[in-house]
Image (tube, rainbow, N blue to C red; front, side):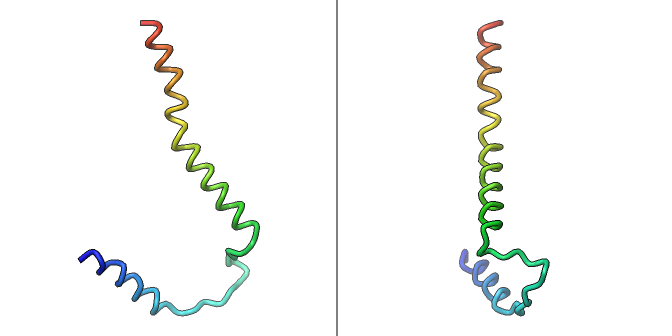
Length: 66
């Protein structure tokens, strides 16, 4: 049963027509794409750790001063 979804997606992608490259196409073999990808990864990772880094000192402050 779990294989039905991926096979359906593969079938839809196989039917997709080729679209030629244009000025609005972001090429994936350039340094710009690599930098953008790394920037997005860094931002998502920072947002994942920010709550723990921000709440740690606050929790310590409130535990020291009842």
